[in-house]
Amino acid sequence: MEESQLVEQAKAGDVHAFETLVKHYQDLAFRVAYLITAEPDEAEDAAQDALVKAYYALPRFRIGAPFRPWLLRIVANEAQNRRKAAGRRVGLALRVAETPGSQNTTMPIPEDTVLANEQRHELLAAVNRLREEDRLIIAYRYFLELTESEMAETLRCPRGTVKSRLSRALSRLREELLVAPTEVPGGSHGG
Image (cartoon, rainbow, N blue to C red; front, side, top):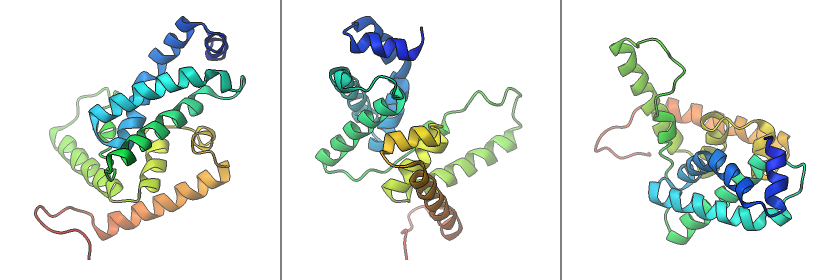
């Protein structure tokens, strides 16, 4: 069944239709929450609470609007509220990106695997040193693979703003990679 039909049925009170939507989006909801909270337990709770909030907010959902960005905005808001309430500063681990993908179907050469893991670690460390807004927009685009339209809907801003924010975030990331390409164990960061 098409997503728009499921959304309409869920909005009309069909719990099974909403359950189908939840099954489809629960992993993505968790990843978004994890990118913000950096805590698996907090992310799980935030994702679950956001899905419940989405269910109760369905009457306000505009039929014909894209569902995924609407849901992700609820998840992101819930995760941000939890993080703020806990008084923690978010430190995006972006471990989602460390999960080996199914893109490479050939056996990697061990040296290549080690090098790729080191580069990935360096990149993620640099992303983690960015401001929250920069980490989030980079994560939405490159780790969650949202389109510019979905990002604009999720962030509630025009697509042009998404493009400029992403461009600035990528510039800051490039600077971060040039300035601090490696972490020194036991050393201090900054200067």
